[in-house]
Image (tube, rainbow, N blue to C red; front, side):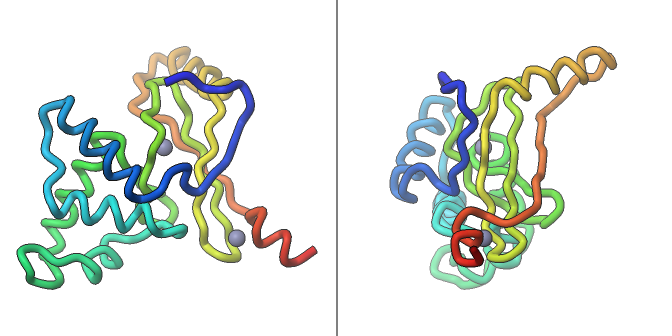
Length: 162
Ligand SMILES: [Zn+2]
Ligand SMILES: [Zn+2]
C-alpha cells in the first residue's frame, strides 16, 4: 500500500462496516476465516475511540447466543486479529485497537495516546520506520514489528482547553 510522504494521524479512517468488509476480503484472500467472534471483536474495536482490554470485550460479546464467552476464546480471536494485522496491542494499556492500514514490514506504528480522553490514534510515518529498521538491522536484530507510543493530549482535547 502506498504511503503519502506526510505523517498523518487518525483514530479511524473508515467506518466499522468498511473495516469489517475489508477484513472479510483479506481473510478470504489468505484462506482464513473471519469467524463470528473474530468479526464481533473487530467491530467493537473499530467502533471504540479508546483501546479496549480483553475484559471490556468479554462483557460485550456473545457466542452462540450466550453472553460472556470464556476469556481463552476471546484471547484466541485477538491473537488471530493481531496475527493478520487487523488489530494492534497497545502494550502500556494492555488493550487493543483495530487497524486499517495493512502495514508493510518496515512500517513503524506510532500510537498517539491521549491522557485526557483515553483516545488512541495511529500515526504512520514511513521515514522513521526505515530508520528504526536500520537500527535493528545494524544490531543484527530481526524485528517482528516496530511500535512507538506517544503520550499526551489529542487535538480534540486541546481544542477544548485553549
Ligand atoms: Zn496499524
Ligand atoms: Zn483527548
